[in-house]
Image (cartoon, rainbow, N blue to C red):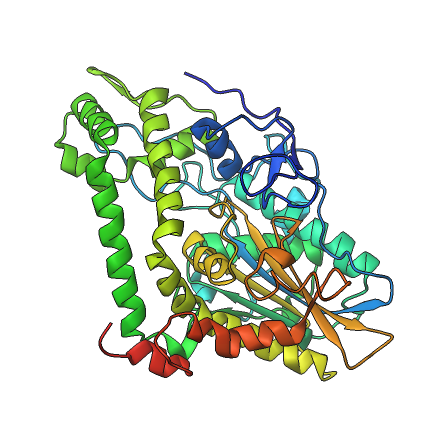
Length: 461
């Protein structure tokens, strides 16, 4: 069973909160030209794959002419990867993780990227990053390895940001210095390699001596503020909610039962193997779903599990347990970003381009914490960008824009939703973001805490 999906072009479409077309509210994802009515699990899965196609229209770098771009803060999810789980007793999907010029998807910079990466063995990265390969290179992908699709996705991201931020806005001078970049990644090869692919698209043939990736041990990028019992308490409640929703879904249980019978293992064991992870890989790479002597896992099984995932996201938004987790989980990273923006607003020229190469479990809490409730779950190679701008007419005034996958979502954020009526400019005052991170995020927990430490250690929840 093959799915020929690769011909769909992704472009932004305006959709209101209730799904009705409108000029005033933008959908937070670039969407195919014809969005299906209602919720379509196959369509949603296709968006998640983010198969490289024609260059998308994007809204990065758009501001009134009297505004000057001061700094850019980029948060990415790694690109397309091989599954992290195997469905027991089935053949692993046969995907080649070497980078080959005559294989789709292709990018004009692919060979130059491989060539440049092979010269980077002496790069100085924070331990343990220096032990990771700089590009994927296994004829049969290893578990969780970045694929050629994943590399191309981020070469495209980098090139798009280069065209806007460097060529148009001259964010970095031609002789940029190492302290003007801030690069951080988790210790997985897929995040390091995604970061390098984006960086190569952004700064082709960069000088290895000027590039330093920091290692972040936590997927939340919480640095020295990771111990937070209350955050873990919210997470346990959220996981309980997920479990109860799954128990109620008899269709899902039936699908798991059928799949378990096909591969001849107990249902519990199949569920533990998280089959949607492997099935999405088959789907995104146009491969047939696995078969055994007893039958085939099929599109209907896939649709049932994908539909449940989407319903889970919807309930997650409504129940707000995840929001508590997200506010505490994203606070250290957003606080660090606000600190960097404030230094840039004072005229400091260090770290004007920051890149965090991360995971879905990094971006998801940040999106929720910012109040972007309509945002889709982070697809492969998703990008969330915060831009800092200076008003040339009033140089002391600074403003921010927030973009998710190229769509301007500034006025969807909880810190700027009400501001549009009072401020005619298409940006949000930096003070709003600072106040939100330093005060309102913690107040939103409803615990009366005014410091992150207190919020994390508050008893009685």
